[in-house]
Length: 474
Image 1 (cartoon, rainbow, N blue to C red):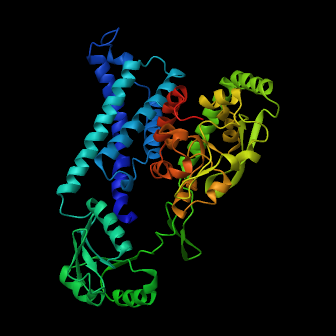
Image 2 (cartoon, one colour):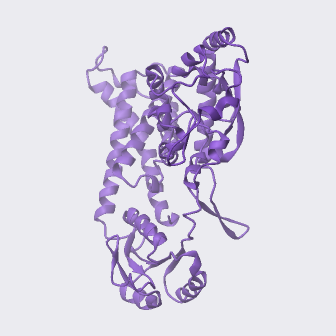
């Protein structure tokens, strides 16, 4: 969306938080010295005053968590409940980080006061953002200038998608008027409740009569010459012009436009997780994965000994899998089958009437006795922490798939590779092997399109319960 339109809002959110966070800390001192709650009752204000270093640390923790959770990006917080969730969860993260900082520095600040600070800061931030939403809803003016009336050239699939985007962003100053299209069957009809005002050649008349400010060109690729003619005519009108390329059928997940050497380019396979988000996810993988590997090392040794005693062959099983963006890597697992299991794979595969391949069976004869136990509780997956440390995988993400199964994918299924592949994920906690991953890509795409640090944490917290139940594991 147009950054010039949204930048004032982002700045106002940043400035308001820079004011409310210190104010909330100060109010926590007032509450701690006024309310006789807790084992010590109300304390004197001098004893609960907060050092300046803590104010600075709180600003860094809160604003950093808010930025990480995209709470300052207007396009990410269109719905009030989405904004409330992002702000609330960012506040929880910030409070935990701040609490850890205080534990090693200013331990005289009570835990009750930290709770007060969270409640005060959250209340102030929520109140300000609620006032902003009410203002945007009742205001008749755009920020800055008057509301921008928009017309779309092209009432096809691309035009409809553009209409949905404009309507979603209406509170930021858009006022969608309708379509222009050359298809005689569409003239005088409505699409998504919005009228087709006339033919494209009527653009000058429509701009003048409707006082149009912006024209979004959403014509199909086959109409390239027509697009050139229209843009030439639009250049003589006092309107802003935006061209929407028809790349939707090509883009894997999130296409990004940028200018390189003066040439506009669109990236169709850019990573979904980039910048600070990616750095934080990688740091999270290294810290949690490293600690996890140390904690379960005795279990790994015990499992390795059981495998060696149960059947001949290697302890570990290395298998080529498809990772992020289609890159191949060697995934490590505990061996749970007989040594020649891959040779027997074709004997186990079952093809459904729809031509889909089911390659995992509940009573697979190739699985060893120890292997069946390891699979039931997903212990065979634990060595993949080495892949996480190495960077081939993440703790959370779609499961890495077998190359020969990926070769059978439809184009839309390949979108699951737009993020790092993981040990556990949304698909695993919602069905595991009961739902073969290549037949239930929708679960993986839910994760891809809704990725956040908090979704990762939610999946990690739910995974042990699924593992203990042994549901769908074979």
